[in-house]
Each structure stands twice: as C-alpha cells, then as structure tokens.
Image 1 (cartoon, rainbow, N blue to C red):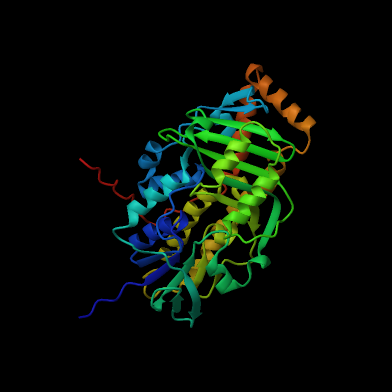
Image 2: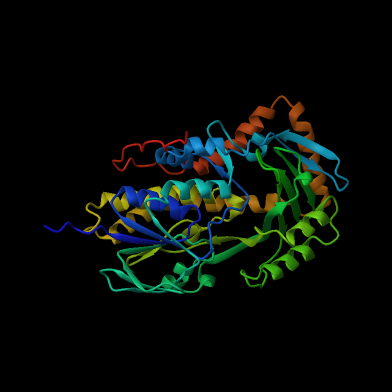
Length: 418
C-alpha cells in the first residue's frame, strides 16, 4: 500500500517570516523548501522589537528562551547635541515603549535562531530566486534563476518589501507601494561610536541619527532617518544609496562624518524608504504573500518582525485547520488567514503613519522643545503615567489580534549542547 505523499510548499525568503512559516508547516505535515536570493543567511540588520502576540508566538514555537538570552539588554537612551553633550537621558524602556514581557533582539540573531530551529527539517536553497510562476489550479510550476524547474502545491512570498513573488503573481510594485515621507539607513560601525547597551540620538531639522551598541556586541550600529519625498533610485544599487545618504547628511555634526565613512565599507549596509504595502488581497490561486511582501508597515511601526511571526503562525494554522494537507484547498485557508490578520495589520500601518512625522521634527524650535520636555520628564511626578501611555498606545497595536490555538500542542524545547 502506497502512502499519500506530503504536500510540498515553496517559501521565497529566509528572513523572519519564511523560516517561521517553515517551522509551522513542517509541524502540520508539509515538506518545505525555502529559497533565498542571498548566497548565505543574512545575519546583519538593526535591532527589532518583539511585543504582544509576537512574544506569544515565539513562546509557542519554543524559541522564547533563546530570544531572551540574545536580548539587546539596552539600559538607557540619550539625546546629544552637535558637540556630543547629553541634553536628555531616559531609561531604554521609555524610549522603546516596552512593557514587562516584551523584548528586543538584533534581527540577525533572530534570523539565526529561526534558521537553526528549522534547518534539519526544511530544505534551504541559497543563492537562487524564483523567475516565473504558473498556477494551473492543482499546483504551481516554478522556474528559478539557477535551479531546475519544480512543481509545488503552494507558493508563499515572504521575500520582503520588494517581493519577487508579489511582482510575478500580482503585478508591478508601484501599484501597491505608498511612500510615507522618510528614508532610513542602518549599518555596522566601530564599537567606540556608542557606549555599551546605550542608544545615542542626535537631531537636526528633518534628520535623526542614532548609534547604539547591544549587549554582547563588540561593535555598534548606526540608524539614520531623514524626511524626504519619494526618491528615484535602484533599490539594489548600494553605491547610489550611499550617495543619497551622504547628500542628506552633508554638514551634520556630532559623529555623523565618522558614521558615513563607516557606511562606505559596511557589509550589512541597508537603505530604503519608509513605505506601506497596501493590497486588496494577499493571495491569488495557490500563491500567497506573508509579512512585508503582503503588508509592509515600514520600520516606523516597530512591528514588522512581529507581524511576520504572527502571520506565519496564522497562515500555517489556517492551512492546518482545513484538514488533511494533501486534499485541503489552500485558497480557503488563505482567505481565513487574511480575515484574521487584516485588523491587526491595519492598526500597525496606521501607527506607522502617525509615528513618521514624530521621528525627526522639522524645525530647530521643535527639537529644542523635545529636548526640554525629555530633560524635565525624569523629575516630573507624572513620568510613569507618560511612560504607561506610550506603552499602551504601542501595545494596543501589538495585541490587535487574538491568536487561535489551532489545536497544536506546545513544542518541546530545543536540545541544549553539553
């Protein structure tokens, strides 16, 4: 008697959402292949917040202890003037609007944790990308830039803001991308540019600079944001992006010249706009989008990583809820996944729009007012109310979805080495 073959899912993207979805799909009886354009796992990137239901998902995956061990453990945040003098200092939890149970981790560390949890059960193909999709209703024929053509039961685009799967299945990116008024850049810098476990911020009109060093990191990271209308450039041309960044920060003091110098050789240099991806639907036939590919809320929301983890949990859970993977129709599950996620996504996209104008005040007077208020806050009797209000606003978005149990049992913790 021949056993029924397991359904085979293809996931494009080995960032956060891709490996998280691979974990759950494998548990629900799928064979999973993850294809990633980069030649190896991307371990760079800035620090990311895990809040609300994203923490619950990490706990259900059994990776929360590893996340806690890799926490950035930031202690304070301080604003400095052009000479480097501190004008306001606050605890990091107020800067991050975090509550007990939330955590912060370097994106590369989280990527590694998820990859390590899945690599023995999932086929990872690095250095390749999807070049065409042909969905005939019963399956999807996929061609690759380098590998041989293959057929899959479903295809998931977890390949980020500039998703190849979205372009192939839904059309040009320009139909769905909305710029919300700023650009960001992040990259590694020498460790002496930021004190351990502290964030230093410097503001000039329309521009924000941050340098920070996380726990256990001998180096540091820079994070720069500047207001700008939509710019015309190739998102794969790093040299052009470095020139745009240098032009935007020409003449800015503090240690910006040293940061820009470091950007020229940083292997993990990142530059992109603060954009939203807004789509009427996230699936077509047997192809579905996940994370930023479906609904980017821009880094300004602070929730992109969380939405990817939660989306992976919901998408896999709805597929499992449809019954036997080989005979279930994924299109029904895709519709249920979208219905569950839409209110959560909308809340976080609106938060991103609200936050962008606050990132970098447009005038020197507004910057001075912020410095004064922050300098006064630690001495005010209502300082805890302010911190609580900030956290409540963020938590409202971070918990704007109720997770279904999907009938799964809690996974066993990962084995520890002797």
